[in-house]
Length: 115
Length: 111
Image 1 (cartoon, rainbow over the protein chains, first blue to last red):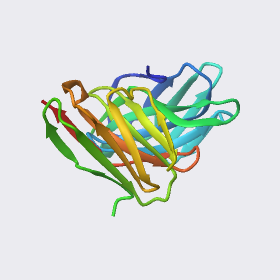
Image 2: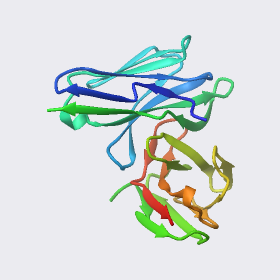
Image 3: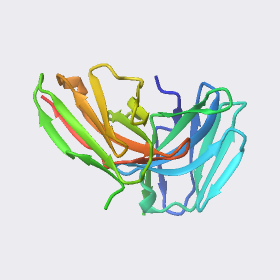
Image 4: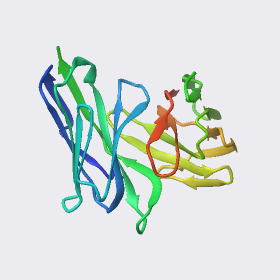
């Protein structure tokens, strides 16, 4: 079963706009990660946020984590056509204060950025 | 050269055939993973290995087997391929509990 559920399933925006993707999960986590996949290619890691962190930034990316609601969001600011891809959240479940070291992926959000 | 390589990149086979997908990495990571991705779905974990002597089943291991020949090599086998194993297969590596690094994928079609 998929731990992460992502919303929306698809998002279409214009270049320069912000894109927000949400991820909900079911069990306690050690960390949550976001990955990007260009069509049919391997996934590329974007950012990792640990369960004791609430917000993290990396360039144009901003990730938030709300463990009380078991949810996370990924914000891409000032989007570019090159940001067109699928974005996946992945959770590393909590194993009593440590990690199981394996990820459970959501179904992904397909982002299309129009020039 | 890519840090995580997969061979073959594409494979078409017939029902009942034995297939091996290979993964090699130059990152020096102990942890390696095999996933499958079906259209419109996220990745599902098939098997994972935290070191050469450690093999663990993932979410969907039925119909698959693996071999960890060395720290750098992790192979996935389909003993008797069936059409619903048609999918995109990814190998990944990681160090400790951090990010995973993915290979380019193998597109497998079982007729």
